[in-house]
Length: 178
Image (cartoon, rainbow, N blue to C red; front, side, top):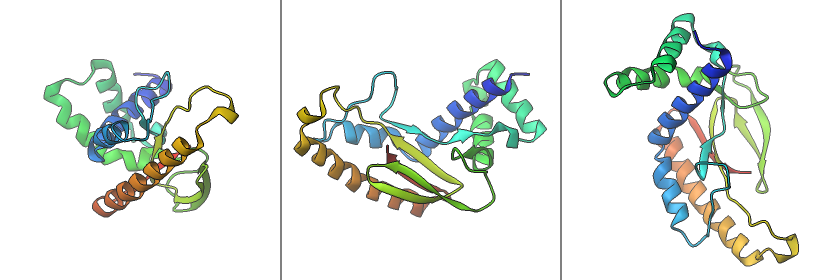
């Protein structure tokens, strides 16, 4: 049996891979990177967009936790990938939560994600975090026009993405830059 920390890490990796596919995050990233916004992936992070939610694997049933342990120890193979996908598909709504909120009680809470103001999100929201590296230069040397252009591009794409994602799926999906 794997440790709780290993289970959380493995579940998060599997859920993020699944949700990146469901919401076409790779295509979204590619669009940002090819835009005129000069977006840059920060050092030490693999993607421009990552899943913000944290896994609470304690919400898994005993059988589900055993399955997660088994696939974590064996490393999923192509022949059992359908079972892994099905497992994540059936469990992520009860496992993923926003930090600081208890999951599943239907409440909303204030969430201060970005320079673009606060957001009041349902507790069971799926949040993708948009990372953008700002060059390490003094604040008085930042190109304000370029940063404004980046913000406009982000806000336009964010609105389109969220409209499509929330229309086609059963999740509350957000793309936040913070």
